[in-house]
Length: 240
Image (cartoon, rainbow, N blue to C red):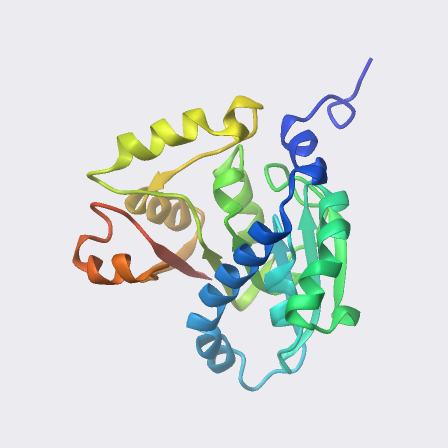
């Protein structure tokens, strides 16, 4: 009989297929991830300004772009980049490194499912990062409770480029998700209202705030409609 870890996992099968990746799209994705990061880089530096021993956990690391960017920060000691497909991380890391030029000696890659309990000791990390990955969890409760368990007092969690629903556009977003190649392949794709994210974080004993981020000129022009016509935020949370 197959154990749960041996059974087919549509999420892992989908992301193990590195042949689907387009270098042009990948370069654009890395630039977008970096633009998110640079918008709160100074906030992290201020939060950890008197430290040189910060340990980071990037969950659903994918391209490992955030890990590469943070590896250049002097306050960072080590980074664990975890993803459901270590094959994908190994395949993309070289390309990411060409773009970012991070300190790869600080980065360790590991395979793991963010929807399940982490094989990580309590209070192991000072900073936890998600880039477009928290919404892939099949149990956001499990993921955030595990984050709360492994984060240290005084630490921070940042989730960027997550899937949000606008109050006026949620039907269109959900229709797009239903038609996506991920959902058609059985991959976990979710989207939440800002208030729902806030609820999950608060229920899992985080204080949370939302920082608007606009990916293009049109979104900046329409910024008063953020949360209604569209919804773009960076989630900043601290354990309480």
